[in-house]
Length: 422
Image 1: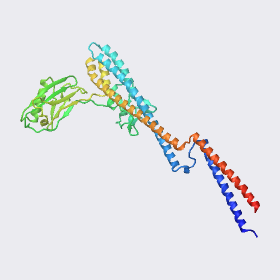
Image 2: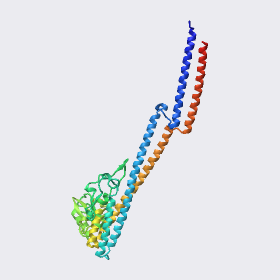
Image 3: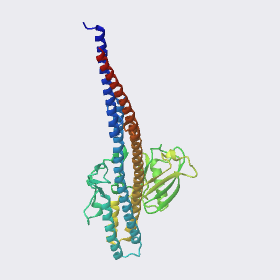
Image 4: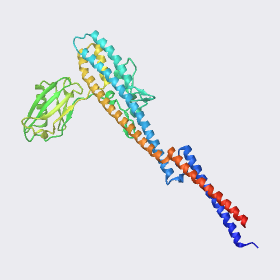
């Protein structure tokens, strides 16, 4: 018979051997993982090495990619704006030269031959300015806004400047944007603005007047200022009488024509009614309270204000200047200076706005780069294991594996001895 107790003893030996073997295998696996960590520099080998480890690394990697893309996009937009800024600077230099030449041409000392020479130079300056308006980066017109595939100015060299078409005759669709930030500048104010007279339309007042009233009036007809001064109106004056009195005072002060009309019971001031009116930014209507009755403007449906006209765009201004030079007309050259100066102001305004956008995109690009650095640092802490730490972990795991193997070897020896004894 076989002693049952000895059977139990041999079964216990078998279990201990399997346990020792499994323990060695586990420690070998841990040693293998720590070896991989040292060789690859990766902290996490499997998703379950750390709670939510894979998800955190995925999120961090996604954020890094996102801010890397934003930095690239913002940097590209910044480059486009810098190119546009350079083009505007060159355009202003050309227009400054056009103005300086026009100042010479405005002088009566310049004869038709001199004006013809200035006209030839102006044509070269103007056509170069048009070319700069069509500045491209790759296949994109930098001043095209959302219509970046359209020429800003379609123009045939040698043709009349006024025949250039703005964006091929299409309406502006708006500016480009990057991450909800404007990333282009339109030149519509410079090349697509219609001239206007100065206009002010008051509100309807009760006619006839219930009490005496007074207003102070100054008018600029586009060439010179006309100080009309205080205009007194009397109780019982009807709308027609008020219009007659204001126009009479205007003519007495040196104006020609009418400055005000009856617009369905309201006083409408408009410099287009003046003989020889010039539609330009210098045209102005300035209404103020009178010195004697300063609080009576409201009874006339008026408020203190200044209304200005609008100068023609640069296409029309260059067209007029070209014609003035060719006709040898110093006075026309002189009149065109008003519009050239206003377009210089528009150009300066666009340049200022462009500089502000360049600064914003530089700041955005830097901010995205800084955020990316922070995210990458977090990624390094989560996913990358330093060499020193990896070596330390591998050494510790190796020591544990060695000790486990020794223990397992001792167990096997003891088990063999037990088997012999039985």
